[in-house]
Image (tube, rainbow, N blue to C red; front, side, top):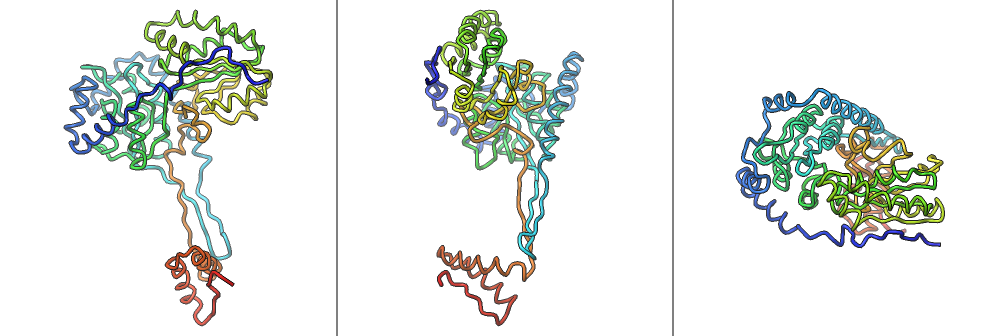
Length: 435
């Protein structure tokens, strides 16, 4: 029997999203032409901020002094965990050298991007964790310059906690600017920044669209949509915890999908009953977001067995995938499409979002079918090289000449011919593409 929907979403993020391409493109073009003056104008218009745009060392010091020590300790703790995990990831990459054929050596080098631009949301919520995730990872990768831009509060500036976190994690420059204008400033190298080689970090639809448009001119972490989360729960799952985890992710935004896939009708119905009560207990803005997300985008799917559940999860390819079911090793081996996986009741998406060490910049909208999340690898280029002796390249040159002529690329073939005739004068080579 195919999976049954006990709750079906009336809307999807793709059906609901209005195109913002024209607006974003116009702003990018205007800032590229007008430079810093245009960027300042948009900052005043959208951020409602006309203060100092490049955060000074004195402002960084003052920001740190405003924070309670316990919060600073928590930021240190999260930073240390993210750093440890990023260092472990970097350890999986290395330089390679191999003799392909006798006399021909090829290799691989890993080279970090020189300049990284990190976007840290700071409007509706102050995303301290995004500063930790992006800046720390870029620093471990070895980027020479790391820029951060974050939306300032009107007439106030960037959240002191974001400033403290960005500085602690290794930011070289912090820009009090959000939205398209912040992304453009990092890309075009305004306000003393080196032009970014790569842009990373979450943001609203305008930030995401700016990154999409600029992709190619700069690298980006991924194309991002609204955050989404899926929970796989069996009959032994704690329905109250499942419901709390769904609500916790639904508060991200009105269009943040949350999904429950289970083989237990009893668990499904208990979760459906509990969610409205948990949402009602949230503060105002969080409650409004969660109510809309649950009403319009949430789904509850009933399956017959765990194989159907796993297949359903792979079809959704969620950004966050939680398993609250038995035999966790089976799930770890079976599941294929997710941004980050949380195995067992003892873990939850919020741990990964804030402090456990894995990165929270993850693929959304089904992109987990083909990519993972932000990592040290995103900031590093894997490049190749080769060198050879005359004898070593002889068979390569012969094959290259014949393949090139088969393709009709005579100029390519002759670059092989000239070397063969130089290195092996007087020898006859069969370099035609036919017998």
